Image (cartoon, rainbow, N blue to C red; front, side):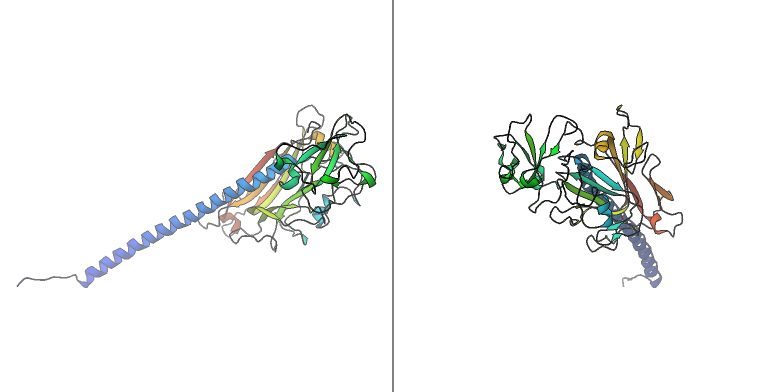
Amino acid sequence: MKQERGFTLLELLIVTAIMAVALAVTSDMFLGLLNQYKQQSKLAETNIEGIIGLELLRQDVERAGYGLPWVIPAGLTYSEAASSAYAQICNEPAPGGTSNPPRPMVTVNNVGFVDQASGAMGIGQADYLAIKAVNIPGSGSSQLWSYLTTSVIKSWDEPSENLAPTDYVIVLSPETTAASFRTLALGSSSHWYATFQNLSANGFVPAQLSPQPLFVYGLGTTAVPTMPFNRADYYIQGPPSSQVPIPTRCAPNTGVLVKSVVSQGTGSMGGPLPLLDCVADLKVIFRLDTDNDGIIDYNTDVLNDKSTAAPLTAQQIRTQVKEIRIYILAQEGQMDNSFTYPSPTITVGEFGLGHTFTVGANVNDLNVHYRWKVYTIVASPKNMRQSS
């Protein structure tokens, strides 16, 4: 009779143990690969957000000053941002506007995170940046222009480049002297705006031949304008916020970098446009040529005069500001308990004007388990010189 033999209990136990060890090792490897995949996915997501959102900010910085009047007729009144204490600080001198021309950009230092409904939240030390230009909205008639002579309101051959009859516009007189260059033109009844179809009826077409045509800029609004330019504010929207939720993967005390356009009709802040999640700090530094010799000789974060510390006027900003640097500290990826950030602090900024962000030195500090990156935007204004 043929002898049949099976596995003993001991052999089964040994095989089971080996399989358990193999499964445990494989599981650890799989979980490690999964965690690495999640980290790499979030890192890629953060980098894509950074490329898109920060490019929009850079473009707006370069737009600063486009279409702005350099001379405001005496007695003209207009209003600007009507909500949020920090938004109002960036207004031109109140009440009701003055004969001071609008500044291409204004900053408020160390505001911290902001919720436009309640003001600063008291978290962090982020700056607040306001940029002023006709084409700031980036769409619609704010991207269009035309010109006037005594007999012509210019229409372009490409229909999409023409202002529509009901578009609200402003008119600037180029002139030839520094005292009158880019003066905001007034129509009948001292109106500084009109719809494109009513320029002639509202008295904006010059009655006699002008040395140069008058420039016409669309304001990109269907509401009656309140200011002869457009404006976008950049800041960190902080928690808690009903307008911009903070993703759950973000580190404590981080917010969302947003852009908010001031409404032409009401002066209220438009719904924030999220640009970059998990942002801890925002720093703005201006590099100036104060003696007009072509060499940058002064760095400031408050746009003050080098010698007197008085706020720079619109003309001084146009003349002296050669470069704007914006530093944004943001989290990369998500929390990783296996990772420890190599430095206890991060400097956000340069030239002795930066903020210091504390990561922590203890493994129990939550911030040490996040990867951090300082994005730097370097831009030169393109629309603040007389040639523009």
